[in-house]
Image 1: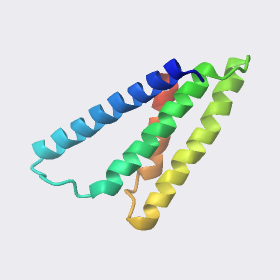
Image 2 (image 1 turned 90 degrees about the vertical axis):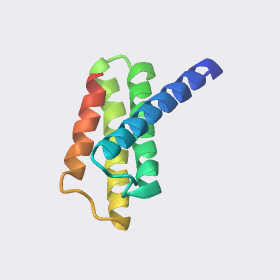
Image 3 (image 1 turned 135 degrees about the vertical axis):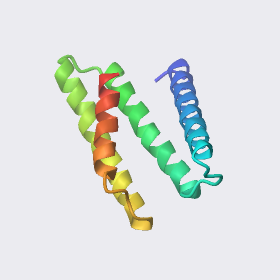
Image 4 (image 1 turned 30 degrees about the vertical axis):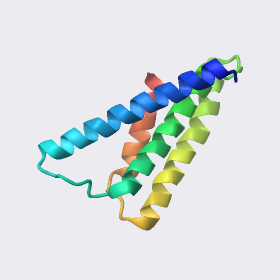
Length: 114
């Protein structure tokens, strides 16, 4: 990976993370919540899940595998397993929402269609 691609990936990651964090903060404020109830762990979880998504996207677009379906499968399976593991580990420190795994799967499916 050359320096230009790395800078592009870091820039995309930073922009998306910033936008998601700002949107989350605005939504909390609009609902009258003035402190993030999940605190810093929530921010770290968001950063990790986004990193997994960006890595999956980069694999889907840059992996040198010819059959397109095989390329997507090679990128999708490890990224989905990493995302589920991240959700599982976060469940060890705090209770998960009932839809945590479904939300993770739907987010990954959305990223695959982008």
